[in-house]
Image (cartoon, rainbow, N blue to C red):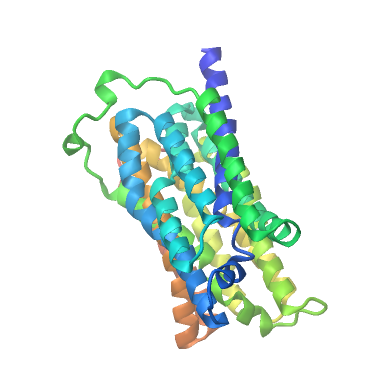
Length: 400
């Protein structure tokens, strides 16, 4: 028993570091992507920005489409094989990006990265299967904290490497980091063989999704919408506020960073609270408090108050995703198809990453930036209400 306890902890730290590396590789290009694309052809500044948006979004679109497939294959063949496949696929794609000669090649390679990737979703599935019931929320919280850490470290590392080493070299360095990821996954990750009856030989026999499953999936998308809807318009929001002595760009960056910092701290704390008080209950409170913190952001007039509210919002919402993942594990009783529902959850997560920024931009363009906060707060509140209704309708204890 002690050996199994040690194994799941080793798995957690290996896959946590692997998720950290994977997200660094996916975000390392953000600071210099328009400039890099400009070096690949005779593009105007506007064309480079358009290509950058297409390159960035293409990964999430293909990843959302293929995540359920990789989850289903994890049910059939095991998660470790899927993790190795994702690492090797990312290694190849990231290395080839450093050799790209046109914007179209970058789009295709980013699409392939979305198809071939899936390390973080595979890690989520394996920890949902391997972590003890009493530590499920904590395990998901640690994984999410590593993912957030990678999203913070990636752009900073990319900016430093591109400035002092080179833009193409940034891709090669990230490829080397992923190669380390491949080795650690191959030699250190251990997966308990699934019972013969649990290997979901026929997906047609998988348990149907009930209202609670769909609530958790929709809430997963809603969470990403609530977190990301303001990012495309943050420069305009901050530009209309008092932000002395910071420049507008610096103030906007700090606002986004403090939100991520709050989310990082929250993901480490709320997972343990979910194990004690119930994942769905903690998620509902997180959404509700988050909504109460989002709406006042429409009325603030100085960036310092906005920073405080965004940090508090990050604390409220940052740990909700691990709670939703943990709740899915408890809610979906067909353990042989757990990868299927976890993969679908990842798809809803990616959809939220696309819908959130688009919604914020469309609402701000049509009605003004203040309405973007109102709509975002409403999304968070609706998610809280849906989860509360699901808990009330469920015949199972709220702690699940």
